[in-house]
Image 1 (cartoon, rainbow, N blue to C red):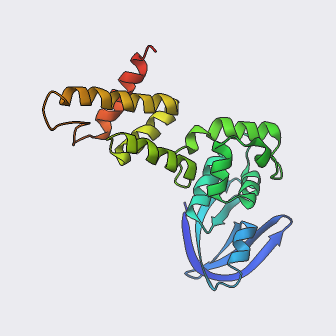
Image 2 (spheres, one colour):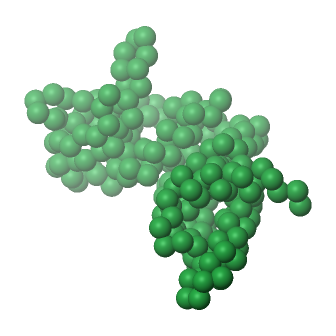
Length: 225
């Protein structure tokens, strides 16, 4: 599979609402569909670097290219949703860059989503339902990052390990509030244990993914509140 290409732009093309270019890489010309807003920004560029999503079909292989890796990664999440095809996903990314689109979906803004061609209300609702939790820790989700930073400042948890555990639990369909409550309860329990020893407050200095993951699961599944 092709994931990244760097080469010389030979020419650009358009076919109805679709736009793209021919990129020469090591003597091979790759025909790549790109966002119109991307094509505009690289019109004067001789050398172009693109993050690629390759689509294999019975009638051939197709390449979709993006200047920003975040756009390519979000595109892949979009087409994983039932009813969202390649062109619908591209239409969404034409209207919003990855940063804005992630915020629109996680904030459940249906009215913004239906402004894109081919996206009706039902499709927009499906996008929100299927992707809301999966995009909470997406790298460009500024709202999530601010919220996460504020949360971890309230605790002594290692932010990198806690984020990995949180992402894993969200993928298991646990709610964000359940996970954060479990983290707080875990820290509270550890603080209570260490308070018996002077000078040792908070969670242990050595905290690994497996420990926090297992303890969080136990807390969530035994919570009777």
